[in-house]
Length: 373
Image 1 (tube, rainbow, N blue to C red):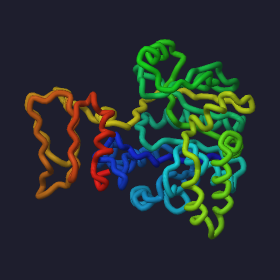
Image 2 (image 1 turned 120 degrees about the vertical axis):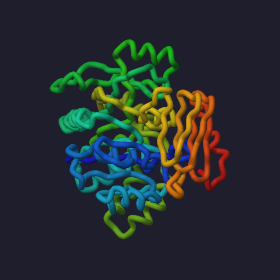
Image 3 (image 1 turned 90 degrees about the vertical axis):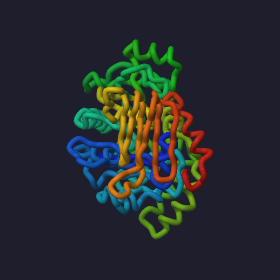
Image 4 (image 1 turned 180 degrees about the vertical axis):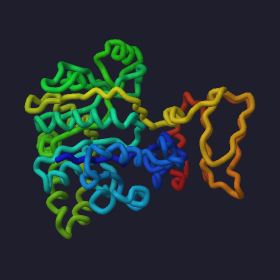
């Protein structure tokens, strides 16, 4: 049967000061969905994309246990065992392995999608159709590991790339064998990739057969496999919580890309396949990326939030006001003669920086007081 896990454990430090430990980026209600009046979170968007693809009772969210209450509040369909609560984050190989171990516990033929919680992906129908192709590929051959390739719109240096190989027999042109994964290239190399038409952005989404994934985990990362098998063995017993708290924090940290996909690419016992996704895919991992979700005015300024914004002779700025409104008005941010700035205001912190320095917000986060992190 088909299952899905949404990975929602990221810290989102590049979206500080709105993203905090207590409420990371995937839980902030700061994006808008067509037909919805108020804002919603990236996690809510990710959950909605599964409608019609995987039954609600076979979907889970893997996240920090500390976020369980907030997730159950905004997504009441996800509660109890439908939240895999990590005592602490141990990177994606363990988040995926956690889901594989739990899904495979009661269904030896479980095939599951691994989805992200920090992207805007549109339109939903194209996403679901491509995911269905991936599910059918693994259902046909459990030894396939399926990834997804986004059609690139520019030579991005911050994404990994998937090189397309030959087509997969029995499927349309979207399905292909993967020749190679390429991690974040320099601009010259990324330009060459895009111009060749042979590469897609690595979407960070996968479809695996649960039994195959656990087998590979035992081969490539035996310590992780052993720990997750202990957790699965206790899952239906009174020792579940104790075992999870005891074992999970000891699991070695690495990504599923490095821990599974990289060694699998050299393993003749499995085959890595890909599915093209020709859609809008936005990784909302930084303030410039978030700016793309807001329509610009005639001067290129983008504004969103609960406060008031005044612009005088200012162009190409992003202003986010997130403070609490008082007496009908929020905090007012005024820019005079400014160009290319990012201004993010909350109740207890304000960030101001040139857009080209957006990656350096992590440095500000590191130096902030603990109660602001």
